[in-house]
Structures are given as structure tokens and as C-alpha cells.
Image (cartoon, rainbow, N blue to C red; front, side, top):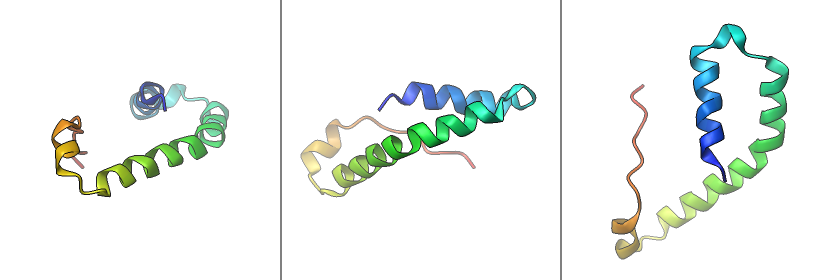
Length: 66
């Protein structure tokens, strides 16, 4: 899964919201949501496997500050 594009889309929607083309956003949602969902589910399964050795080698993902 190419996460960079999702990150960039989020930045545009969050900061340049007056320039956002809602049709482009909707098409991206329809096209990428199934793939993104599968990728996230796979990551969650890996995380839940409980393998302590693999946990130490995983990258740290920052949490949202909301």
C-alpha cells in the first residue's frame, strides 16, 4: 500500500480545503478504500500476533494528537 499518497491527500484536504475537488476525493475513496482496508487489517493481524521479537523491529508509528 502506498501510504505517501494518502498522507498527501490528507494534507490537501486539511489545509487547502477551499481548493479541494470533491469528485477527486470521492473517486479516491471509492478506488483506494478496499485496498487500504485490507492493508490495515493485515497490519493489525501482524500486530496482534504477539511475537515479541518482531515487535522490537517494527517502526514506531506516531499517534494522532487529537
